[in-house]
Image (cartoon, rainbow, N blue to C red; front, side):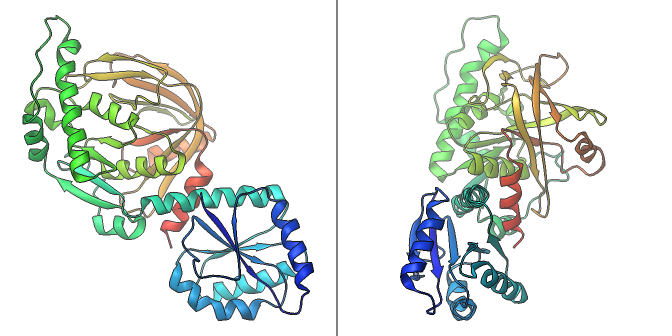
Length: 398
């Protein structure tokens, strides 16, 4: 992460005293930063740009700088304020002025631990936002017919997130698949063992598409493969997610975007899954799907795809512990996020192969699924990520 700190200083204050204040204040934060002083020439080019209001009497200086700063960045203004030299009063006046101008901003002030934690969070958000700019995600085949509440406008996604969506016909994937030699079918009575070479071939075809189109990820209308090649994409998606790509199911674009945001913020994969049962009183939710990123599981077994009984599905066993359930809406106007604990894996015969139970920290949040859900698929991400997700989403609204 790159953090730059710029300064505002009144000429009335003694330069040596101000320099000592700066050293004392910034060293107390224990963060890595690039001190730019009053040189704003590269403002807006870092994951986080902070303006340290070192003294009072700097309000007019900021007002004169504002047009220049707005040309360089449209992100909120983050003002660092100490408890010395009227730093905080000047920051209050500057933020009030920004609000009057319809601009967003925040004053970072308080004990060093609080300020440092907030800086780290904002820098993570800034880094993620910059990584999303120009990101290329493919939609291989159209979204599945049953995703009636998940239509996405590509231009809205580009404007709000900076992500470019590319439509890739299913015929393109099938043609790529034809160019890959068919493996010999093993002499086995096992449906899964017989299907695994074909599933690996689908993986090779999808990886070839990713490389040809320079994609960071994709979502696949995977059920079309059942008729076209009598196999499934579950194995391919599990492997590609492990290798650092976003690989989603059923052509579900909002879920693909949710997975992309989660990985960009956390650096880890997310599990695309459906709630199979919900206890609104306890907040217990059983999530299931036939594929899971292989970097998320402690162990796994191969089985058939649940609905069709053919191909290769994956029964993954995820580690217990804190998780976050997350989903973006199709128009990016809202999102759901809830933290909880993954407490159990299952192997029930009448559900998709990977099955986990998550207890939400706030059981009342389970009512969301029954009263105002954002589609059927949701994404389970390791760790407690709600705060950083909320911080990033607030930037999408600006």
